[in-house]
Image (cartoon, rainbow, N blue to C red; front, side, top):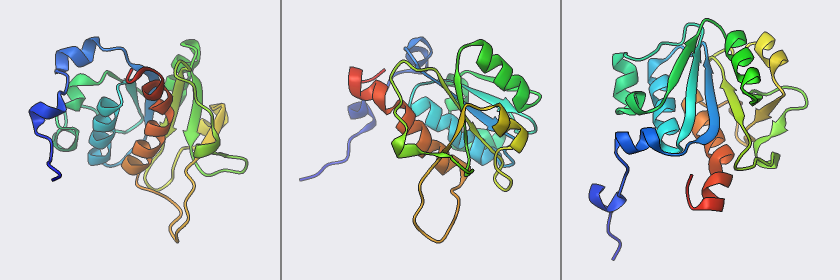
Length: 182
């Protein structure tokens, strides 16, 4: 018989253990995200995959915020984050820190997510854009490339929280498969 695992069975780490855990060398950058619920969802995903941090840019709201709290479920307290006035400032910081930077966007010559070979130690930053307008063109020009999630239905985009889950899992997957976890 199949049985659901209890919270004790899941053997999750504590917030203190999370803070001291080795993180995936991945930073999610949120550019002008309108919905605080989407921001909270990305925090929860970042916690689940042990991301290095989240960089919040532009008018994207920051913790503490009741709508972030509602979807992040405490991840806004475990995941490191930093706010930048704009994406350009965040990209400059990432470049100085040795990150390879990708926008998640549909552009000419974008790289299909499943065709990009990420390594467990590669420092990667991924920029997720506004729910309506996507990643700003000026920001795209600062990136090393654009990653696109292949889609096969009638819709041409995914909600930013869903896109973040798909992309961040794919990028962090090598670290999980080579070491049994980060």
